[in-house]
Length: 200
Ligand SMILES: [Zn+2]
Image (cartoon, rainbow, N blue to C red; front, side, top):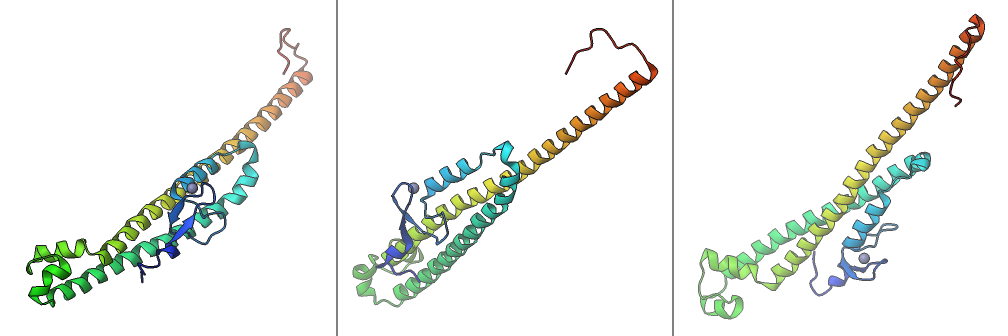
């Protein structure tokens, strides 16, 4: 339940840039605002091709970490969506049961019509407080989803690079053994070596 007097529980300070941000999630190495999350995962996207073995080991853990944060954030968004609907229904009931002479004073509408009720709900602070939290939660969820997608791409990039390195390795060993076979044949049949044979 959102307590509009205690929005502090939804706020944290970004540990990189120090700005206030919504929905700090208790997770090692997060506690970052949305724009620092973007910077962080873009930086972590870089792959050092000479560290492929180490990267392949840490990559699943990173993906898992961001994915678990994404699941938490997705639950927060759907919880706020439910709360928004419940608050709307609650206010709708209150407005309809309000005596006509108090409508203007309490809800700023002269009489009960469907559009007047909608307008009164949409500008009621109980409703707008939850709505702004909901919008912030969506932004945060989408930022974290971007990180998860980035790490998924990174996983397939690492796999491609590993495959590439593996195939190059086999190509090289194949060409070495081929050259040795050629030399062996050459020495056996005593074919004169070409005069301008390039040394490797
Ligand atoms: Zn930041």
